[in-house]
Image (tube, rainbow, N blue to C red; front, side):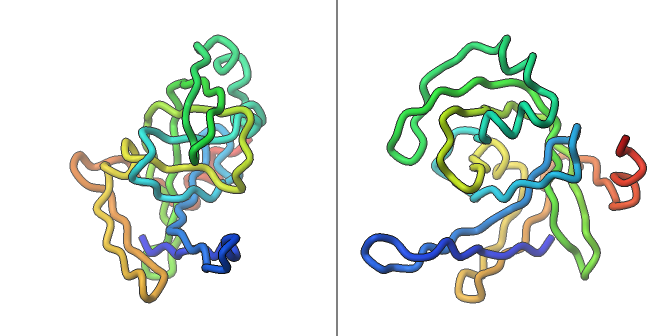
Length: 158
């Protein structure tokens, strides 16, 4: 799948902030994709708690044990649950979706405009970066995770 880097403006020192982004949706709401930074330093997939609640995971989030998690040098409260994620991209102009079951930590407060796709998700893919071109290819690696076509996702919506 071809993916792009995203420009997040400039840092306080005026340096451009450009990061590799992947789009992730929860399988319960496949039409709602959230941009996530590929973050090799993150020990998990981190998303805003509000996003999980809007996707119907409120009861599961409430039952999960809260823990303090460092994100970007700050502590936030997170609750981890098992969820089905859909990673989206394009191959030769056609949108492709890969379904993965994994732990996801829903955090509050969450001040970032993106989620974080940490190492547990990243390690399931082969990633080739072309940073100068601000793009990368990402393909499932290892056991062949199920791929869903756009029509499959559309048919599964309520």
